[in-house]
Image 1: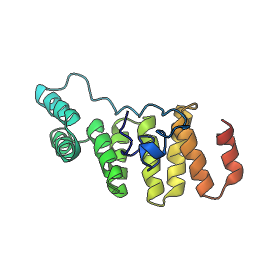
Image 2 (image 1 turned 180 degrees about the vertical axis):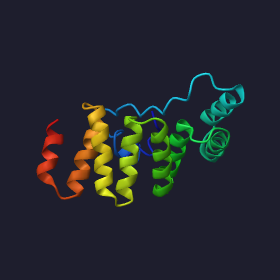
Image 3 (image 1 turned 45 degrees about the vertical axis):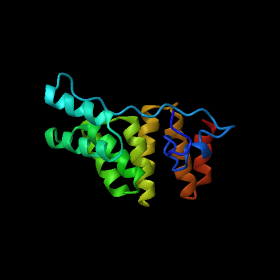
Image 4 (image 1 turned 120 degrees about the vertical axis):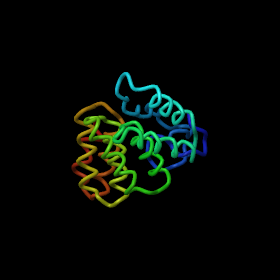
Length: 168
């Protein structure tokens, strides 16, 4: 559970206390799991991965970059670096990391959803809509992709299209 002043893990951009941590808020869906690394990785890579997972803030970012230097294209490293870039407001870098992670793990709903969120921040509403639609197709009952798709359509001024997703 995030602390009350941290960004809400749902991707809304609000603080947890003002989003899913509010008194009457709906329960927070579990944060997307990062893509799984390939099985049976060398001990050096496993140690880098463990160190990156255990680190926080800038140290974690440095360690995920070190892992990418050792294993270019690692989807878990790209996932975490995408999250760090998104939290820091660098939406272009976040999109690049999420795209790289998706190249290695296509069909990962958490990555598709997060990519949609940063594409919206970049003003690429139609591209974001397609990513949310992909996530909804893969997880039709997933609350976050449904809500994000509905919000995206609303922002595009398409209220008739929004109703389908709000009904679901």
